[in-house]
Length: 157
Length: 383
Image (cartoon, rainbow over all chains, first blue to last red; front, side, top):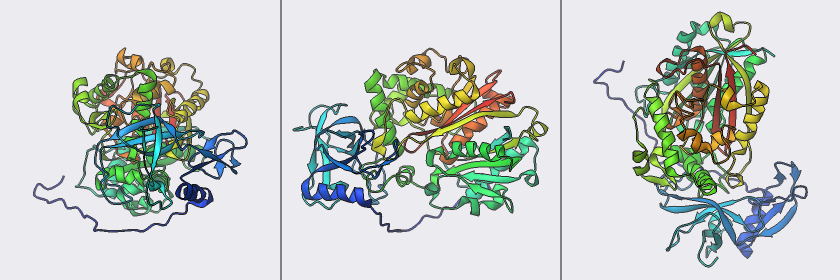
């Protein structure tokens, strides 16, 4: 039994920062280079099952075959599914609270067989719906990462 | 290969925050109760299998630093960790280790202190930093995407989902180890804050501090330890894909295929009729509708009807989550193993106030990460 007058203590960590440095691999590097330089989405197609993968990767899981055929997909697509995040939580990448509410979409880019996860702009009029057409809005200063796309928008798509 | 049984288990009284114990002390509570349940001593145990999700506490290596409390001092001690499925991986791994013939009495432990970090932030670290993390919002975002898709496909409503929360909350009232033990109405679920459309606060599981220990025994010793061992009839698991966006939302492919393999192994043709109780790792309400369809209990889109008809209630054809399930208790690394302990409790007749009468066959699941699934089937008869 815990004594009634015992002050139960906790230890809180400080402003710790542990740096990581992740390799994108050759497929990931090519994808982001194309996105940055040409605003193009490139996927990898499996020669066996013809599935087009976004994010591109060097192996098809089901066929276990190497992927070599690059194909352009998008830039428009449709909403496979989505949600609107409404609770604040800490982003472990930045240490900051995420800007809620925000639209979170699984985007099926035209020609792709898998979904790209990205932010969905919340429409000024009406609600988001599964199946809606979307287009990417590109960032002004592309860096070669996911933030080169600001979000996907239903406006103008 | 040896036949394997669960001969006893122990759980902590699960709750939101246990400041009175550190990790090894929490683990030790469950271990002591499991040993008491079986009458075994620490010296009788051949080895320890333990696991959690390291990143929730940010302290790696539980198999090392919990050795005094976990009972494994100077014995073979192994860790398994697979994210959300950690507890069910432990349940399956324990089965495999004892079936191998290398262990006769194995102590299997799952635990978590979710109060020690930000759960959503910690879960996010399990996902790809380049492609998945930027927009990701932990378990809730993926589950919301799944629910949105399911509702769109079949016209399932938030009221259908709330009905399941009412069931699990009602069941938890009779389980002294459950974390959330408070009755709720459909209206209260529907009035709770929207957190990720269509999910509301009370559609989701809590974050819990807790531990569970289960003792596995081989066929050579099981019947000497327990008057009514719970035999493991089948285990299966599936991991369907790599990146979050790869998911095919319906039906949950991992659970569909893992359950068909497990049914075949256990000789089950009509799960609704042949299985007497299920403890499902359903971390949010809608999973108790769409995933029971994947398990073959209802046709596509008809999961809600099965629930509304009362088939899954304590007095129904197939009671689901007599313990109150994951919606009431979720110490993540322990959650899948609690399902195994609860199934064994039901078969051995030790489930107390939430006992389902006459259970001969039970099924538990585990769920995690990229929608992967674990399944175990248990029986009172030696296979």
